[in-house]
Amino acid sequence: MSLGEVHWLPAYARQDRAVYDPEHPLVCNCGLAIKDCPFWSRVEELLARPLADLQVHTRWSSNTNSEESQLGRRLLLSLAVRVPSVLGLKSVLRTLAGKNLASDCIRLFGAVAEAAGRNICVDSSKSAIRFRAIYETEPSKTRAIVLTRDARAVVYSKMKRGRSLAAAADGWRRKMQLIESLTAGIPREHVHVLKYEDLCEDTESELSKICMFLGVENSEAMLRRPTENLHNIGGSPSKFDKERISIALDRTFETGLCPEDMREVLRVVGTTAARWGY
Image 1: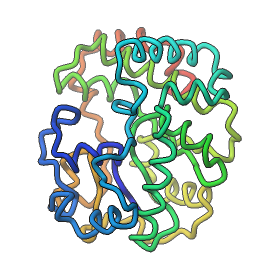
Image 2: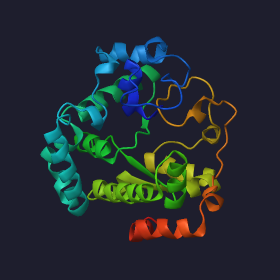
Image 3: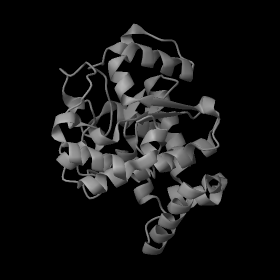
Image 4: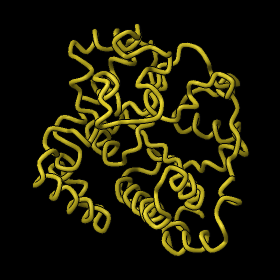
């Protein structure tokens, strides 16, 4: 069952644009508000608690709200990048993620699986900290698929939304370094690295590898984007476009960035890009 960026679910349930303010409406992929969506209503019923009260995002977990806690969290993040072994300490993860985040996420996944009649939940929330906190709680049931993309393409996309080149490039570098730290020490068979470019250029082969990684049967239906019975949260507004059913490689950064900008991006991301195959 694909959930999209489910860490935004409480914001959708509360219609709270103070924490998440995309261009598109805060409605489920089916087009209904969370309170009116039969699927999410069933999930809420199974949880026996309001979806709006879940602590499934590191941004508003209960012990990360104060200014003092935020400062400590930033220092721990910096330490974790340099010394990944500290992430093996549950107290560190609790400070970074929030004490209730892992348990709330796991309960949510259980309710979703029951409501959908599925065994696997695919959560596209972009938080390595969140993944590691959930993994430490349920390692036998949790797997990471790390989707990477050329830093230049990511920077160009961020720049189109108002971010400066320097900030976007530095953000990519720090994000990838954090992922390296938060997947360090995890058995390799629990982490699958997937390049966006490879997925677009050879979708069938890459999906086959993902199926092998997850231990599920490959199906030709996986090559076609479904258009019905979808209940994704967050993500690109393209999810509402039922005409966009194919995967296509976006290389507009090659003309959108001048040669000097491309060189600057590569200078900022440095050896981190090389370690990820770029």
